[in-house]
Length: 299
Image 1 (tube, rainbow, N blue to C red):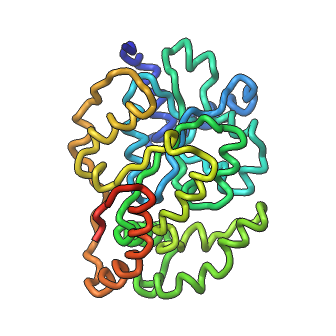
Image 2: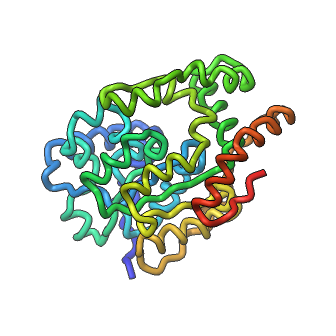
């Protein structure tokens, strides 16, 4: 059984996961990352990754999972190292600098560390890159109804000031916006498409293609694939399921943090648009259900 966290450990988790909360947290994160870069050789690769999908609950799952006293966070929740060429070609030592030292992970009774970059599931070169350095890593995936995920993704880009089209216009123009950028990312490891990163509302929802890429490198026993709607309905149960998958000790999370959980509420999608997208995703969803061996019941 793990001992309760000290005040310092709890503050460290808060500073690393929520640096925008106050100036001290932001300063702490910068100091931790700077120290990590100088001492990368003391820092093993992480034990687990939350791969995505984007807008499927990954941030909340990561935050809730950090309640467990046997987990320390990365110094930045979303590193996107394996996705963004400008980061990837900084090298593996740069990446290792974002995680606690092996000594801290042992002496503080913190056995595991990991990160959550929701771009990892989607981008084609990531599975091979991860396997080259972390072949034993545990991988966690949240899959959300692709119609709802696309709508949430769209509103996310609107809030960021990156999307000026209506939702209907955006999905109509997606193929033109993306062009051959996905193929270019496969052929040229230095190529990075901002359009692919920002406007792939529908393409990101074709999960089965993405999961098959990962299964080419990692066995099913190292992957936990969860339904986002189950997480929204009962986040506590999902967090405990993830803890079990990571072979963590018996643990009862503090249920108070789950009471105000909200996956995001927007104006209703146009009913005709919803029907159109349901039809669009039906073949990919059916292939996904067959691949997983279970029906996720997305209408």
